[in-house]
Amino acid sequence: MKIKYFLFFLLAITISCVEKKDNEIKNEIEPKIIKTDTLKKVVRPEKQKIKIKQPKQNIKKKIKYKKFTKGIYLTAYTINTPKFYTILDSAEAAGINTLVFDLKNMNGHIFFKMSQKGFLRSENIKPIVNIDRVINAAHERDMRAVARLVMFHDQMTAQRDSTLRPNSINGGVWQESRRKKASWLDSSNPQVQSTLLDIIEIVAQKGIDEIQMDYVRFPTQGKISEAIFAFQKEDSLKVKNDSTYIFRQKEDIIENFVSGAKEICDKYNVTLTADIFAIVSWQRNVDISATGQDIQKMTKNLDAIHPMIYSSHFADDFGFRENLHNEPYYIVYKGSALAKKYINGKCRVIPYIQSNTWKVNYGYDYITAQIQAVMDSNSDGYILWNASNKYYQTLRWIREFDNMN
Image (cartoon, rainbow, N blue to C red; front, top):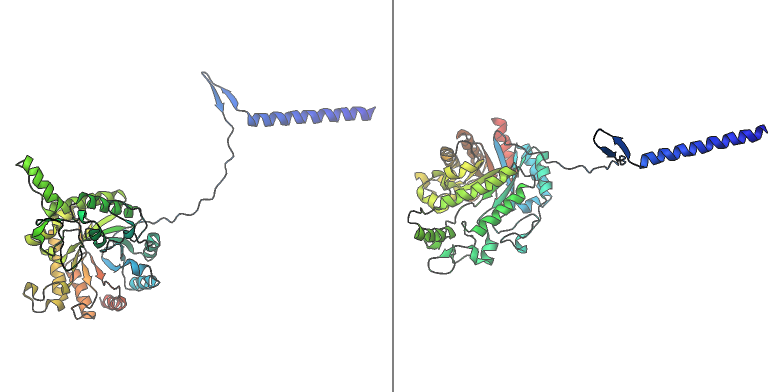
């Protein structure tokens, strides 16, 4: 009898536990109703939070301008070879703090992957540069990463699409040389400008520190007087309907284009600079009207300008000198000082200096004279230019020079 009562008691406890468990499960699944003064609020059971391991992102923190820029230029082809890192290491040892590299060159090649916008075609796109890799390599060495983009000089596009080139007063299309193939686009053509600004915006989003525009001017070779540019045709039509209309000049076109590029770069916290003809530093009216490079107008929207002051590119008797090609101090000092005279106050002057043997007696004295001229003119630094990217000896001379100063 006692055994019978014990089994009955055990069964009752088991049933009670099952009912309690069922109620707990039901309460967890069903929404709870919380009464308030005016409404019944439904509180859903919280979903189980699953922690997903996020991949580490490579955050490229921008590197600001150094007090004194010491730059080096490399082509996209050099970047795409094993010696890229060797050059960077040698440059770092010489105190170089800025890397300038091509993402669009004079031929019209785009060296990174992008869609065929505007006048671009598949033949323009040559994606051999990994931009992230280059930025990381520069930043690891505390160097600024600067993307060089050639603007209105584009051989591939000029030869493929004559509608993007200037017209000729003699009819047809203008060409800077009869002996050479076309190389220049119309710097005022809306489609040309729109495509280039698209390229600038795409590059600005890549984590780059700076965009450096080259050939941001009008062509100067050939019979320029026979060329008719898009803005001139447009202005001629406007003046027919409005006798008070003032014709624009080439410098107005360049100023407006630079302003558009600056607006894009500011949006992505990227500095914007431009290369200028060395002779433009003198700001003679004939040079301004030919190139459209008015320093005061351009530098309102630039963080720096880079006069390309190579003694080999001047007439040997320029400035009444006897042997200007081998007087690098004089020409670099003069060109840098004049550029500083005409700039907007906030814009830096960082000239390109010659780092090759073309037409000059290149050696330790030649390269260091240029650097001393940059320093004596109170300019903001320099960038080494060697189209073949042969810098090892030059970098050794720079190390020696810096150790002595």
